[in-house]
Length: 85
Image (cartoon, rainbow, N blue to C red):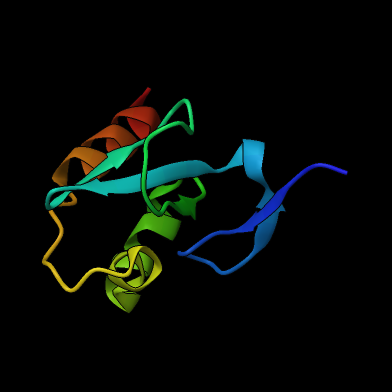
């Protein structure tokens, strides 16, 4: 059985391999493509819709258990680039 995770944006369960893992490094939210970075990770479908839902719900801070304001610009830029290509 393949590992299953929950998207922080839409709260739907999906196979871990179909989701992006994001981690907080200092105050920057970065994608962990290899799923090898240390620390807590949050999982997200690679869609703008799920990203916007997660931001609106403040889900990244809760999932990563941080009180800091997270810089989401790098993740947003990456998701926008995949949509436009």
